[in-house]
Image (cartoon, rainbow, N blue to C red):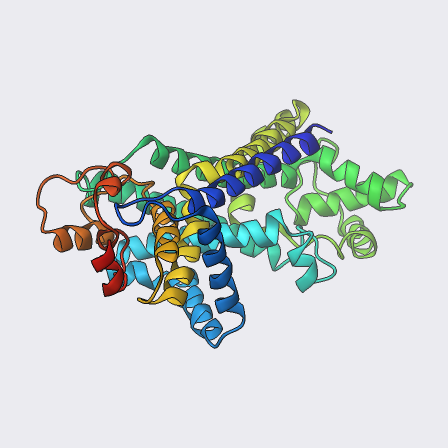
Length: 388
């Protein structure tokens, strides 16, 4: 009940945030060009862009942009000429997207790919750990760039700290939760009770012995070596009742390694229901991250692809309404949350374009003082620059 309430609350906040952001694209303006464009004109312009994507040959060029610049992040590599920045973004993006689609939303997307999907089966166990490692490695690179290689050249704001912290908590608690489930005798007993028809205590002991030997379970009942005959019986029961839903946990290489580290404490942790505590931490961190997505710099995961698509559809020939919409989307697509730093390629291009060398102010302040052609990483049509 609590988890459902928390999930629906987070979803509601997320949807409200997305709607609010999209509404701002058609209502607010940046730059000093054409301030009197009706909201209805901007909405019509947005609708035309959507139709242009779906019902024209540009659909293929849009797909190319989404794959090359969205999925592969090639624009980051080209703009920044910083391989470390590209690797960092790829690690976080690929790892996070996989965990979101095939784990958090596994009951929808993973089932579509593999109808017999279970989170405890491979390749999902292995891939979940691999992608978790990618996210952690990406976050480590982000910290290294900010504190060592690019120290003083990249501004670290509270929002940067929040993003790194929330992703670290989500992934770290996920690893810990899985490791506690591997060792948990309570989890094993609940599984046997709910999903098997084993009533005989000797058979239960045989199955438990097999899980202790092969699946990393820590049991207060199986405290000594058992006979090969008992293990053979346990294997037979496992193949009858468990194997369809459980791969060997060794493939979850991070979680399993962590379970070996906590093995001496496993019975005590199980007794105080540490798994339940970590489950609350993990789910609430996920829900909080979801609720805050539209209000944090993580929103650029949505707005940046939209900005790239709009730019591809509009090219350099666009009316005032399209330009106004595009500039607002690009502002939300700034991955630094509107606060420019020295290495930002968009900032560098703007600085060259307006021939400025003074310290650069936050974009949200600066954007209200410049014309349309000085905003965004791509030029607008020459006719519009003239009109503006």
